[in-house]
Amino acid sequence: MTLTSSPDGAAGATLDAGLEQAPPSRRARSVARRVAGRLVGAVVVLWGAATVAFLAQVALPGDRATIIFNTRAGQPIERTAQELAAVNAQYGLQHPVLVQYLDYLAGLLHGDLGRSYQQYRPVTQILGEQIGLTIVLTLAAIALAWVVMVVWVTLTAGRGPRTSAFGAAADTVTAALPHYWLGILLLLLFAQRLGWFPVISDGGPVGLVLPALTLAVPLAGFMGQATRTEFERALEQPFVVSARTRGSGDLGVRLRHVLRHSALPAVTLSGWALGATISGAVVVESVFTRRGIGSVLVGAVNSQDLPIVTGVVVLVAALYVVANLVVDLVHHLLDPRTETS
Amino acid sequence: MTTVTTAAPALARRRTRAARPWTLALALLLTAWFAVSALWPHLLAPDDPLALHLDSALAAPGPHHLLGTDEAGRDLYSRIVHGTAPSLAIGFGASLVSLALALVLGGLAALAARPVAAVVDRLVEVLFSFPSLLLALLLVALLGQSALTEAIAVGVGTAPGYARMVRGQILSVKGSPYVEAAVTLGHSRTRILRQHVLPNAVRPLVAVFALSVGQSIVWASSLSFLGLGVAPPSSEWGALLDAGRLYLTHAWWLTIVPGLVIVVLALTATTLGKHLQTSLERNDR
Image (cartoon, rainbow over all chains, first blue to last red; front, side):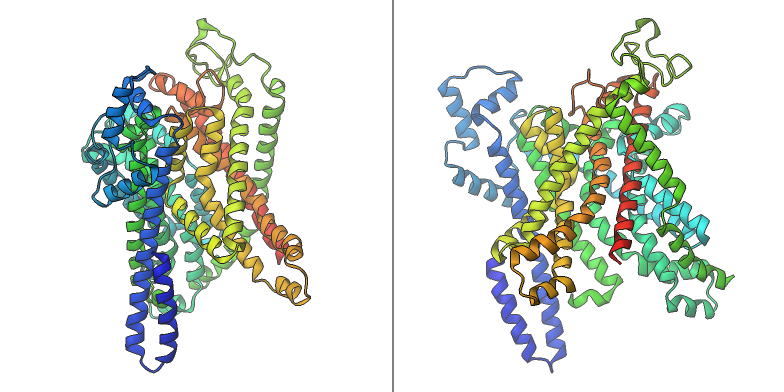
């Protein structure tokens, strides 16, 4: 994919150099090339993720048909050649590895993530039942993290040495909090002691609060660290002074001008954070006994049911790719200067 | 009012740049405590961490047992002190794995011939798209559960981020005036690499190593918390957490305290790492 696209790009560059006098077409082409470049990059990441996932399944030491049997039975038992042949046929293991690889890639294109060793069912079906709840949790957490971060940074950044230092210290501390620990603290305090929220998080919105908060607080601290530096730099820019001379209030300047200029690093981080938050959700779901991919994934790791584990890996890589394309777009909307870079 | 608020940021930044001395002192003190706990645990906790006192099982923190006891009456304070060595071993092991991998991948991506560099670059990009914990889980699924796998899994899981950092660092050193000067002087490629590029690219990693140890222990304990880490009889902090979970509702200290120790260690490592980073940057200038 890269091989075919890079000569095109080089040719486009030399063409562009000759068309210096025709700005509109040049601009359109540069945007088109940028979009094409992003898409190629996205495809390469997905293909790489699929390859890693396939290699991991092949790399499991031992005969795979025997492994599949043992995973199902939960204990090692001698199998007859006939039984093994049946499993080999079912999973296509009698073919050479290269054929299996191509089959796997072809399957992915049809949305087929393989078949669980333990549960006999397609991985897509198993994950499909659980992923919705995890995605709801993840998106709620990222949204909450943004709210917490924006409020905290707007209130504390550039407010004199003491407040700023306190704000920054809070960022550092919250960013370092492990999800399981924060989750347990919140659980003991707000669910067990005060009884404001259910101890076991069901699908409902009330049960969502504590798990989402657990994921949001460290993320807010993490994004806050990046935003705070930019925020304090933006506060010293001439446009802030000019907005103030026009009579804007302090809060208005911070929200309308400074925030827009300092939000870029956090926007970039959000794309990365989606994947990290999903894996954090695995821990948080375990703390709050919430349904989602967490318990499925942990169970699969325990029983070495690799198709489920690699299925999650491929799925998260796909979400990462989509999130980064969206981030790119938002980045562009916030700061049109990035158009040609 | 306006003048005060616009002048404040510059002041504040100068203040935060110069690491506040008491924070640093506290971090150093805690480092000393963790070092003694790891090397000579008997100095800080003379009691046997595995001694059973069934008559005082699940005792709350108090004068007899500073941090309480677990379900078999084992003293939590002693177990935490004696668990420092295995916990730090996993943290250091994971960081070594992580940074070694990062150096190889980042170095290849920055220095190798074009096709190799492009492939490695993409590989790092692909691995970076997997969250650390997920990559670690994949490795645990492949290799099974043990302290060694935990270190490898966490190390590999955190490596892609550092590999990107190493690559960027080497590229910026490569484009620096002193390397250009060395090239102009006609020095050989290996000499430039050995004398200029590598030392300057590796030096910031000292600070990163400190950050990484703290992060690795947090990730490793997350694996343990999910029941995928070291087996329970060990006093490793993650194992303590995992074991304490069963008694969460009536013996909160069994999970909260080991977790707090991990948070404190992570913050100590972060503070030291950031301090090293800023002092190295200041030397560069």
